Length: 252
Image 1 (cartoon, helix red, strand yellow):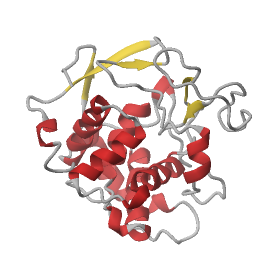
Image 2: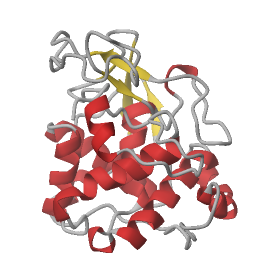
Image 3: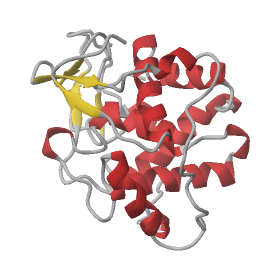
Image 4: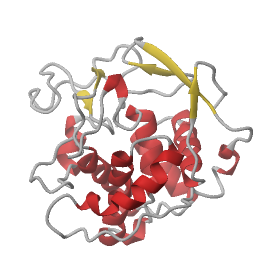
């Protein structure tokens, strides 16, 4: 998959609009990358995923308890927890945890807030988060339009979309409705989180196995720097703490 944020030595947002980097805690969790997967100190409670309506609402109490510690919105956390429960009940052999999804979403869109967006009560972002057009420039893949601009708004080249930055072709294969409105929408964080889970679990992956966890993240973005970045973020969330940002960086 081609992503909006290519993690090299920095995260380059929207072709030069800004540069952000992380300051992490004193120790580097990536030293465990080959031996264990990111954990979770607060597993998502059971969700009745077949009930009508927005099933992520069942996690409201859990999300409001943990979101302040993690540093992102309770609404986004509900989406990740709902996706964990959905995959646990539909693809239990995958062992997907919400922390992996949170790590991805932190990098891809700052949990649906990139560019000043907010995640609304129904899970849809207040404005559409779009990457640069994938025209082969600025270290991007060249992907000619595959959806006539219907999903991504670009009829010349494909563009990554939404909180998890899916390209149209991938969305057509994996995209699902997870908030009960009858529409699979890449700009809805519930839909996108479950879709990301389905994508990561594809090919019978077991994300409890470190090698397969890495393979899943590499399928999202084929860069070991990206894998290490997701691992750090997911590990921090798994320990019940947030990430600190500023304009300095720690080498990945």
